[in-house]
Structure formats: structure tokens, C-alpha cells
Image 1 (tube, rainbow, N blue to C red):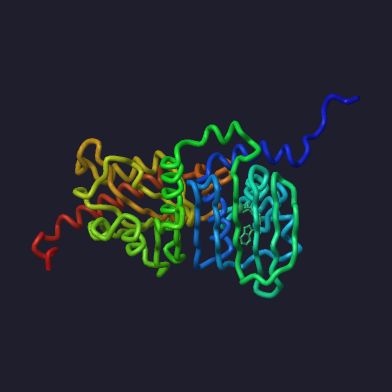
Image 2: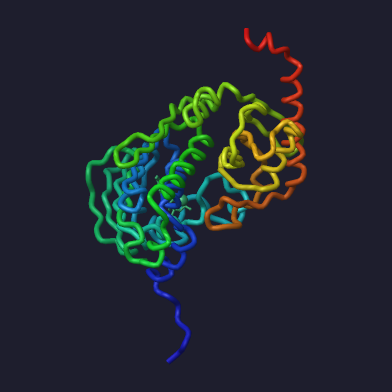
Length: 338
Ligand code: ADP
Ligand code: MG
């Protein structure tokens, strides 16, 4: 008998789930990104027990046709890319086709979905098995409920931290996704209590106010800059409005929230010596570039990306912020108070 065999789909999905679904906040991120890709204008998120008991995401997007439902839960199954060429031109948040397969491998998932034309579908997938699928009257859009996360992977469940820590991570990721999409109205509820709500009026400053408070939003400057390859825009706080943590910097590339140490450093450099030691600004920065200049296929969660002209972009951020701050300093205090 041969010693080498291919793993079953269930087992390989469980293995890849370890990369994509680290904790409840990863489920929230993946489901909300799918809702964004589905062109939703309203996304409602409900979590119970910091996401272990329930993560539910309800959107009003394009929905999934009945015939596509079983495929959506297969690994490497996606509607977002088709060819290698598409991979270098990704404009959607998802493209790896791993999230639904991974989540369904380690939880109990109920899907209710309907497209504009077809009747709706209700399906249940648990531990990677499609348990049922039937037609039902469902409003257009998609509702995914993920229950009992990590019920069959006790090692992973043990790794999950306190409810407070996990809820903090969920709030953080929803904040970032909402900041990246001011045109979408978001709500987040934990154990039925409203935690976060954005208006979805496509007004970034208003979205910032909803997340960081009106006073903070008022102490921020809008800015924009561009060179041949990049466009940067957004809001950053005046040097007297800071926080003790770096976590209030949100960087987005083509609508995707990303983490990048060099670019974060470049933002700080724009302030020069204006920041007190150990204090960090609040900033929400949208960067637009040709998809060819950014490789998003570096990490399963796609939060780290590879940029081909990172130094140039960093310089643009620093000089744009520096110029905006010095312009602000030229305006006399008295005028400000008008
Ligand atoms: P990916 O997002 O990388 O394509 P996923 O596993 O997250 O992979 O989703 C698989 C497919 O299921 C998507 O390509 C999309 O066609 C469909 N899908 C998932 N969530 C939604 C949603 N909320 N609305 C519409 N379609 C969805
Ligand atoms: Mg996805």
C-alpha cells in the first residue's frame, strides 16, 4: 500500500482554517469583506460571547444563486478571479476562495441568501459537511450565522483569549473596515447591545466622528497629495490630539485595510518633532494605486501586502503631511476660532 495519500477535503480545510481563522475577529473580517465585495450598502454584524457563540453578518448585497451555494463552501472556490492575469489585477477584497470553506470547517454555519432574480436559499454547513439546502423566501442579500466556533478544534478554542480581548479585536477590525468604506452603513452589536454605528453617507470625517468621537474628528486635518504612481488622501490629527498607542493609524490601499510598518513610520515622520515622545496621531489614510503595484497575495489574511515602490510612497506620505501641517501653522489662531 502506498504511504503517501492526499488528505480529505475536510481535513485539508481544517488545516487551512488554522491560517485564515485565527480567532473570532478573523471570522468577522472575512464575512464583512465578503459583504463589501457583494456591493452592500448596509452591513449589520451581531456577535454573542465575543464571537464564540455567534458571529452573524447580514448584508443587502448581490446574494448567491442557489446553484452556487455548495461551491461557495469549497476550498479555492471564488467568483472573484478566473485567470492568473486577474490575480495581478485584484480589485476585490477576497480572491483566494478560502474563507467560507475554512470557517465552515471549524463551526456550524447557516447561510440565508437571495439574488435579485432567484428565490432564496437556506443552507447549513457544519464541520465542512453540507447538511442541508432548501429554497425559501429570503430578502435580497446574504445572512451568514457562524455558531460554536472551534467546536471541533479544542486546541484552537483554548488559544482564544478572554471575552474582553476578543471583543476588542472584533471592534478594532470593524472600525477599520468601516473607515475604509464610509459609503457603507455599518452596525455592530455585542450581546444585543449596539457597539458601533456609521451613517454610510460616504463622508469620511463623519465616519471618523462615529468611531473616534466628534471632538477628535474636529481636530483632524484633511489632506491630499499625489505623484505619478500614487494618490493619498484622508485625515490626520493635529499634533495636540494624540493617543498613547499606534493603533489609531488606519492605512488603506485601494479600499483594503493593511498593516505596513514603513508607511506608518512615514506618517509619523511627517509630524517631524511636533509629537511628544510616546504619543501617536490618529489618522485615516486612503492610498490609491494601480493594482499591479501591490501584491496582496502574500499572506492568507491579506493584511500584509508587498509594494513595489514602497520608498516612493513613504516619501509622498511624509512630504504631503509635512506640507499640510506647515500650511495649517500659517493660519493665525484667531482665524481658526471664527
Ligand atoms: P473569496 O472571498 O476569496 O472569493 P470566500 O470563501 O470568502 O472566497 O467566498 C466564496 C464565494 O462566495 C465568493 O467568491 C462569493 O462569490 C460568494 N460569497 C461569499 N459571501 C458572500 C456575500 N456576503 N454575498 C455574496 N456572495 C458571497
Ligand atoms: Mg472572502
